Amino acid sequence: MLIDAHGRVVDYLRISVTQRCNFRCKYCMPKTPFEWVPKENLLSFEELFLFVKVCIDSGVKKIRLTGGEPLLRKDLDQFIKMINDYKPDIDLALTTNGFMLRHYAKNLKDAGLKRINMSLDSLKPKVAQQIAQKSVLHEVLAGFETALDAGLKVKLNTVVLKGVNDDEIINLLEFAKFKNCQIRFIEYMENHHANDELKGLKSDEILSIIASKYEFKKDEKLPNAPASLYTLNDGYTFGIIDPHKHDFCESCNRIRLTAEGFLIPCLYFEDAMSIKDAVRKGDIVGASEILRKVLANKPEKNKWELGEKNETSSRAFYQTGG
Image (cartoon, rainbow, N blue to C red; front, top):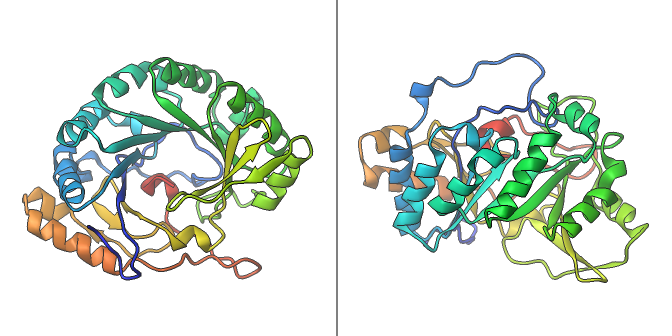
């Protein structure tokens, strides 16, 4: 069992298999051009799998593959199969923007993928294009339908931006409800790579908009769940992810691994240690020791404080899976 210095059980590993992305979402990507990490700097799937086995053997029960856009990494289904063959009952999930999903959903399901979290920031083509800086909505919706047809469980994620898509909150809720998928509205997370002009809505503002049409009650928050859940009178449940609150951290059970091999204890802190040398040498003991050290350094809380003292994350979300 993996336990951090604050007594939290860590049983959730998020792996960013690539920092590359085919979107340039304004809430994530920098304005200026930048260089991708050379392919030779990335850990191979075989090297990543060595560390995955260490984590599973130490008590990790859930693994989520992220990016960038993870479907840009060739042969991702083979990596999924490696994990699933080793631990068939592992909760194996994927976060994607959905653009390429219609080409891969069936292969991912056959390989052992169980669930998908998919971004859907707008149902309006022009707004979706404004956010992603690319015409994306047709392909995203096609990927969504293909994933459902393949038998994958799908949750939808929406980053709510003031004056951009906040007028679609109820439409997006109703779309997800019609498709029998849970939607989670995400507070915009400030970071140095985002467009400076963006402003987000806080959870209370999002709930106020939904309350203008629907009555709902707040559910009891599940341990380790990032989202606060709410249930409409007809039984449909939606979520809000509000990381500005420190109770988001109280039950944090996750660590993050980048494609280059950096093991990160918290999304909002710069501290990280590399497992690259250890796994490339096949040094399982060394990799295990690095894992223990990272857990010992996992902070109790993020750096955000409500009010004017808000700090922003300098780590790029496209490197760590956001």
